[in-house]
Length: 196
Ligand code: SAH
Ligand code: MG
Image 1: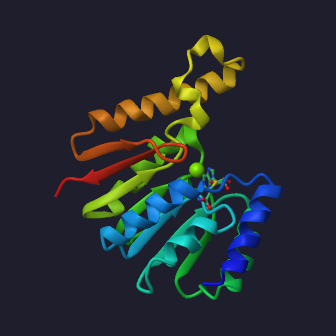
Image 2: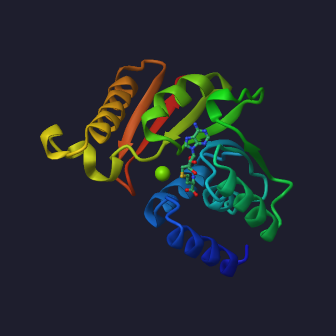
């Protein structure tokens, strides 16, 4: 993998305010993929392809299908995937994930898109998970906002988004088909393993 290209992708994300995964979140994710011998991955929220490309670096058997609804980011992800020569292993889908149907089964589903919609993505794609597979959700801390009192958050819109993330946390805790662990790394990850 070309370290320089990765650096350029991260710089682009920085300059253009693309919310890619933090380094610590990414390290955790890559280790998880390695330790659990994950091969087939579905990602919701490609952005510019950074996390999809990084996940492929764990080993040469990994394949990723990833969905992005923003045209500019999707086009940028095509360029980046070409630059690192991963066209055969990363399948880029340009659409709203809530309108996408996939037929395959995945070892890992990585939810990293609109925070308020995480539960919808979970429910839409959970049947595409193999028995014993994992759904990992990013941004469970919502940049620290979930730990604030509602009165401390000025905008009503933002308060509603925070509520949705909290509701999703409660949904995961109460979901008996999955065993969920919350990890305080990066912006907060939820690791939900499907009971087999
Ligand atoms: N996983 C990426 C970062 C994703 S940022 C990385 O770490 O490199 C979240 C992305 O999800 C944004 O680009 C946003 O456009 C996309 N997104 C949000 N809601 C979506 C939806 N409903 N369908 C598809 N993409 C969505
Ligand atoms: Mg994220």
